[in-house]
Length: 165
Image 1 (cartoon, rainbow, N blue to C red):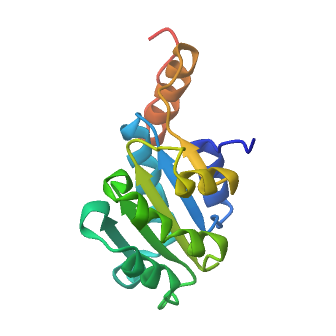
Image 2: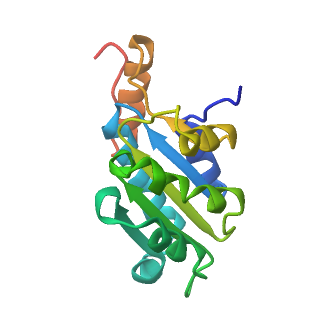
């Protein structure tokens, strides 16, 4: 069985200036999910090129062909392109199947991130993403992970919180 990625792994890749061409972000911790997506948007695509190289779609309103066309587009005035598809769980199973061909041969200069509240790993779309090692589970933090997470989040905004606090 293929292992799932952690959010921290994705952020480390981002710090090195590279991301995989496809990810599935899923799980109940929407707050951390949004923090990672914001960080990716801010760091992966230069601000002056975001209008040309960042595209966000919503599952219920989008056809797979439109998403794939966007992901296959060559970046303009930047080296990378970012395509985010939110609420993937609202797309039908047959629509999700249409993405399989892209998953097998993604555009290397694009990062396509599927965001799903619930991932149904019985469907071949989700299975394929997991098998590719592209699934990032944003599960709720365990008790022993909460304090370090609070400290690192506070540090990001310039605060220093002691463990006892």
